[in-house]
Image (tube, rainbow, N blue to C red):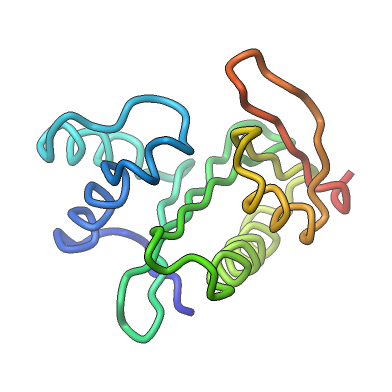
Length: 151
């Protein structure tokens, strides 16, 4: 698997397609973008020195994406998506590993955190395999997890 920082029009269009996929949307917090133009405007605002979006490629095919947010001087937040048609092939684990490798080499922060819907058992299992433990439960059905190996 290769991770490429999302920059090209094709990559940004893939992000829109992925984020508006109903199966993906039901497992993410917040509403998907209503149209491609709003999505592109949003990405141009957030893709900066403090937020990075990577497209995950397997055999030159985009299969998902990850995000890294440099949120404080002591923490970064990560997020992951593998498109439903590519799930169950070990790609989620590869995406998490490669993204955490980037976090550890670029940021060297104390804490790596993520949020996941309580019902997303498959994702929670993957995160636990990488040392994440439940740190908080939010009223919206989200669980906050922290990488225990960094604490």
